Length: 296
Image (cartoon, helix red, strand yellow):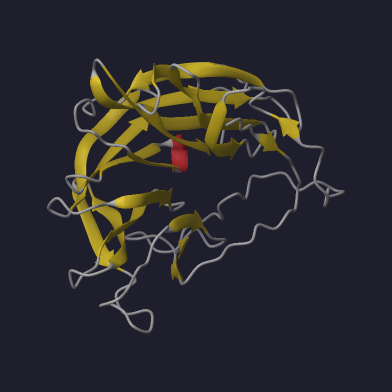
């Protein structure tokens, strides 16, 4: 089967979301309301473009390309797309970046293994216009998690293993960027039910293997992450139902180094819950007051 990625751009396109429920985190945990709105440094063009541009073939490949993720610079509207590619013999983690809105893409291979032995690419941007990527790969080193950074020039400057991840079989990946461009990475193992937190600044990794949650060999999947404008990282995921049946949506935030406050946010929100709940696919995003919104 042949698949490819196309991408289109617009200043003011509306994305439709279908979800069973939504909640809001007001301000930020432990710090009151945040002082700046997420995305407040994004450009406001005098003549907004309300229609889509002509689609651009990003992958330019006859191979099987799938599971694309995108991050865009708030300064120049440059884009990085990360995805997985399968050839007849190899599995590749790919990225393609440009340097301006609707500009040409230059792609590169971040890492190569056997088919189906890598993936999970997640892309986010920071306030400087750089794009950040996390992903996983299984090879002779075991299953490790990786981090890459794309500069404003569109060039990959860092592509490294995340310390302490090799051998933990963490294939659930999530990423958030906080104030001062702090990288908040989450990696989970859905066979032993653990979710771990890692933090990086421009000097390197400063937090590794910090436990966010452990379910005792019950699945943790659909991991998503965000950070408030006060710098508090949050993670949400689908986990086993609190009654032992079905599934619930859980949220955790870092209230202090090594301390994560967790709650089951979907336990009593809908008719028939919690005994028959099948909640899934949470997604976190910042709101206009510096807090967070969660849909699932």
